[in-house]
Image 1 (cartoon, rainbow, N blue to C red):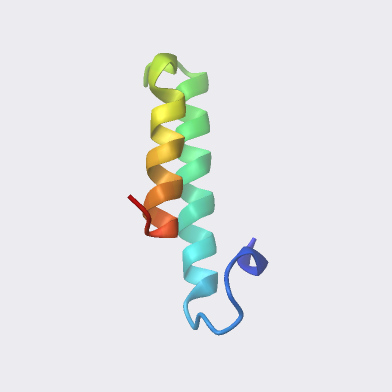
Image 2 (tube, rainbow, N blue to C red):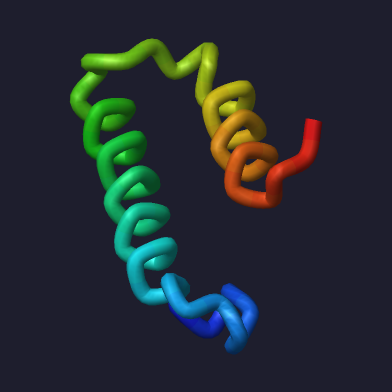
Length: 55
């Protein structure tokens, strides 16, 4: 997953770990019903825009 980030990003392994952990957490919490399924698209959009640093 680190290859998803620019090679000149010195912290790309850290970004990959944090992103993977976040996605895994969302998936586990959604699957177990601990977070509502109806907000899934908004959560993922929020995560992607924060990582991409876009509005």
